[in-house]
Length: 240
Image (tube, rainbow, N blue to C red; front, side, top):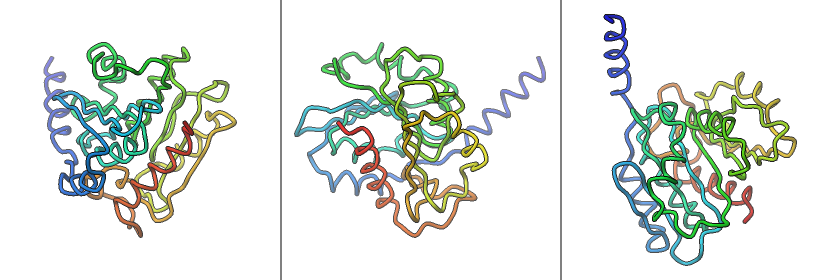
């Protein structure tokens, strides 16, 4: 019992130290997009939807470990501006592994937020440990409900090599956080038609707006440039 209490206290202290969203940088992206995207939010979820067209597909994005979920709002704004409905869930203690089934909770709890989604393809995406968590979830739900997975500076622990799931992997050329040994080993788990894209000058941290993580590389592009590039690549991958 004592060890359990010590572990719980230690874990809580560990999770209190996390990367917070850069609200100023996100506000600049939001201002640039203007009224082309609408957002709806509560304490558990932010929804981003295009205003000028019907959504082409739905993307559920699992945040990276120990990163405030709203830090990915900039990327979600860019994707929504390109015609995709994006769902950004808050994770307990900022760890997606504590809520692998976040997408199921969204579907059950927020039917009004995703109304009109009948017939649309669903994609699960994630950054860093969020992408690993997303791959684990899909490994347990290989029922054809999802069209693909998008890994941002991440890798899969689930074997998708024999599945019909589409897979996109994106990372920055200057990323010094992503474990490249694990990443390269995971390639054997990719489907044959998987796509890989390396953002020249990009880093691990710049898929969100939360500053630069400890140990990351030195970028030669701006945070916004990497987010725009990532959104373009994801759009081309989905191709809807």
